[in-house]
Image 1 (cartoon, helix red, strand yellow):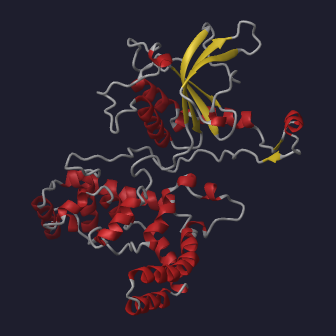
Image 2 (cartoon, rainbow, N blue to C red; image 1 turned 120 degrees about the vertical axis):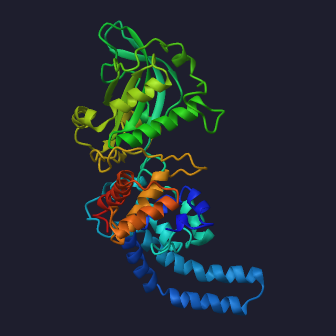
Length: 436
C-alpha cells in the first residue's frame, strides 16, 4: 500500500492515480497489454533498441542525433502503433462497425489504452513506479476509464431556445418564430416541428430545446447537457458555481422564467424524434430556471423513461435509405445525381453501465478521488492476501494497520468501501469482456 508510505502520500493527490490503480487491477487492461506486447516483440524492439544505443554512442552532434533517432523511430512506430491501437477490434465480426463494436461508442475510453501500452505503462507498475514521464502520459490520456471524469462518450448535442406559435391557418400546425443560441446544422429544429409540442389550449410557448443522441446512457447525457449550459450561461467564469453564480440567460429565456414554478413539476416536457437518426429532441418549457431545466432533462432521459421514445423514433425514422440529390438542385448546380450516404443507424440504448456518479470528489487537498477509494483499495489488497476483517490474528493486524494510517478500523465501514472498489473493477471487466 504505497499510498500510506511516508513521503508517497502526496502522489495520491494526482487525479489520475486512483484510476490507474483501478485499471491495472482489471483483467481487461493486462489482456490488452499482453496482446500489444506480442505485436511489439514481433516488430523487433530489441533490434531497434540496439540500433538506438549504437546511434547514441557514435553520434555526438545533437542536431544529427535527433535526425537519426527520428529516422530509426518512424518505421518502428509506423509498423507498431496502428496494430496496437487495433487490438480492441481483433475479435470484431466483419459485419459489425467499429462504433457498434465498442461498448460505449466511438469515444469509448478503451481506445486510449493503446497510448498507455506504447508509453510503457505496464500493469505490473504502481503509480509511483511508473515514474514522472509515464505518469504524465497517464494524466495526458485521461479519461481512460468509463465514468472517470465526464461522459464516457461525448456525442453531438445541440441546445437552443425556441419560441413556438400556433399557426392560426392550421397549415403548418406550429411554427418557430424566434430563437436564441446558434445550433449545429442537421441538429436544429425545423421551422415547423413534425410533432405537436404546444399544449392543446396554448397558442404560444418558449422552450429550451435539447437535441441529443438517443443511444447514450442517461448519466452521460446529463453531464453533457450540464457542460453545454455551463459554458453558455457562464461565459466569463472558468469554474462557475451553478448554485451561487448568476447565469447570463438569453433574453428569450430570461423573460419567461417563472420563479414561483413548482420545483418537481414535469408539465410540458416532451421528448420526440429528431429529423435524423440517431437523435431525439427534448422540449423543456423555458419558464424553468437553470436548476429546474437540468432536473427536467435528467428525468426525461432516464433509460426507463425512454422506452416509448425509442419505439417512436424507430417508427418515425423507418428503414434508412440513401437519398438522391433533388432534381431542382441538379438544375441549379449543374451537377449529376449524387447518392448521399444514409444517416447513422440507431444501435439501441448503451445501458451497459449502471447509473452512478461520474465525477468523484474528495475534501482532502485537490484529490478528485474520494478518501473511501483508498480505503476500498487497501481492503482489496488485503483481501487478495487472504485477510478477512474479523477477530482473527490477521484480521486484527489489518484493522490496526488501517487505523495507524488514519483509516476507520470498523469492519462495517470497510466492507462497503471494499465492495465499491471490487464492483468497479468487475464492472469494467464485464463491459469489455467481449473485446479481450
